[in-house]
Length: 327
Ligand SMILES: [Zn+2]
Image (cartoon, rainbow, N blue to C red):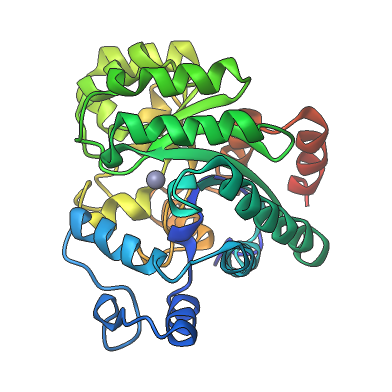
C-alpha cells in the first residue's frame, strides 16, 4: 500500500536540492560544464557526508546560470512533487545562487520562478510559495543581502525568510540583524536548527531569531523541558525523517524522534528537504511513517492539516488547498 496519491502539503524543500540529477546532467552537457565527479555510475548524486553534500550541491548549482535555468528547474522540481501527491509546496529560494545576492538580479530570477510556478499551477495543479533563505556558512554579512532581497520582494509569492546551510557555523544571534530586517518587512520566519546542532542550538535559535517554525528541530528531543516549551509555544517543526536517516543525523527510521515529539504535544510536519539527494519523495516519507510507526491514513492527513495551518501563505490560498486535501 502506498500513499503516493494522497494529497500532501510540504513546507521544507530547497529548490536546487530538488533538482533531478538527470536535469542537472543535461544542463551541464548543454553548457559544457564538467561536473561528472558529483554523480555515481548510475547517475545519482554522490557524496561522502554532510559537508561534502553541500559541496556537491553547490557544484550542481553551477549549471544553474541564469533565470531561464531556474524557470526550467522549478518546473522539473514541481513535476516530481506533483507526481508524489504534493498539492502545496513551500520552497526555499536562495538569492546567493540567483545572481549572488544582488536585488536587481534576484528580481529577474524570481520573475522566472514565479512564471514557472504559474505554469505548474495550471498544468499540474500544484501551488508553490517561496521562502527566501540566507546560507549560514556564507556568514552574517552575506546573509544581509539575502534578507534585503527578501524584504524587497515580499508579496503574495515570497512569504517567508529563513536560514539554511551548515548549521554549526556561528551562533543564531550572529544573524539576528537579517532576521529582524525580514520580520520588519512582514515576512514570516523559519530557521534550520537542531539537525546537526544540539538542543541548545534550538533553544538559542528560538531565543535570538524567534521563528514560528524550525527546520528539523529533532535534536530538541535531548532536552524534554525544551520540547515542552516548543509544544506550549506552538512552534512547528519541519521534520524531514528520510533526510535525517540518509545523512546519518538519526541512525534509523525506528529511532527517529518524530513520533516521540508528536506524542509530547509538538506540532510536527513532514517534508523531503532535498529529495533526489536523499533518495526520497513525499510519497516515500508517508509510506515509511506508516510502515515504521504504524501511522494510518488519518494520522498522515493530520500532518497535512498541521502543515497547512503553519503555511506562510494567505488565507484564501489556505482555504483552496484545504478543499483539495479532502480528496
Ligand atoms: Zn533543509
